[in-house]
Image (cartoon, rainbow, N blue to C red):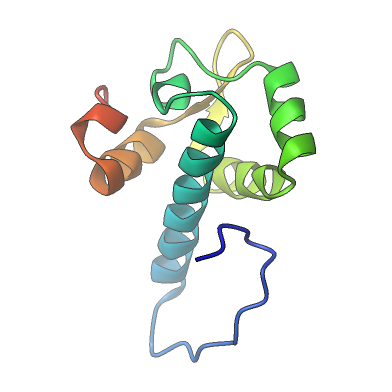
Length: 113
């Protein structure tokens, strides 16, 4: 299963999903991709699920360079308010983002959700 958002997939009919349901599905997809990319590049989920940690801007640039999909997911997460920059200027998930991560990956993924 390709992990890239840019992969071509056949268009599927909306099947009556609301905009909110579509946004949530997109967020879940981005959280899943973000988790995979973090692991692939030597990070753990707690890097973004713990509000006092986060990814520094140089780490974000490195991830975006190595995996362009990261930048797309980061934009979706920020625009939906599932992620933000903490007081140290590091990229972290918000309460909502942590809660979704917890729902998807369990307690270990988002201990502070």
